[in-house]
Image (cartoon, rainbow over all chains, first blue to last red; front, side):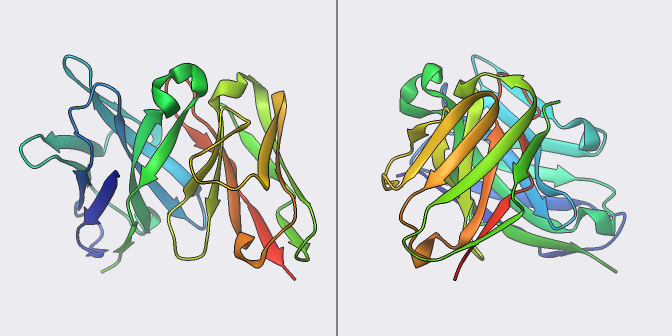
Length: 128
Length: 109
């Protein structure tokens, strides 16, 4: 059973950096089948995909255009974790942040990919 | 970027009734890439349906998905009180961004 366990501060000051961890159990961050994502949810924006990382002979990182200048996703294979760093935050970045696994269900992308496992979510408030 | 529009915004039904939730895409998409999630209060979203009509593991057969092109539907037959949730559709295409609809809130009377 795959589990994603998130951790990180719940309060960040404006202009500072938001940092969150996602610890994976039951799968490997280096899996050739999975993609590891960060998603956030707020009343104003709804569910918003932020970025992803995956390993296919080398590491790939892709980000949403809206946050591309401020976001870094990184990986620690020794800890089987991946991380979100969002710089220069404003109150508009206040949201519940989720990590999630992207996977081709049943092992075949012809069966459709989806976010099949999610972390528990972390409310991050940006306020002074 | 694909924009997904869900309707209605809120649906209020009684136990035992049938719920029909709509998701319309701004352009035609492959049904392989249309996903439905259920989000109960205080919880993370949960995968319900992938590839427009395939139930995820452990999802009761009361939940079914259908559609193609730009119009997709999630149907919940025989509503139960535990189905109280917000339901989201998502386009999980071959490359990002991965967009979500704004959600349909299902209330159980």
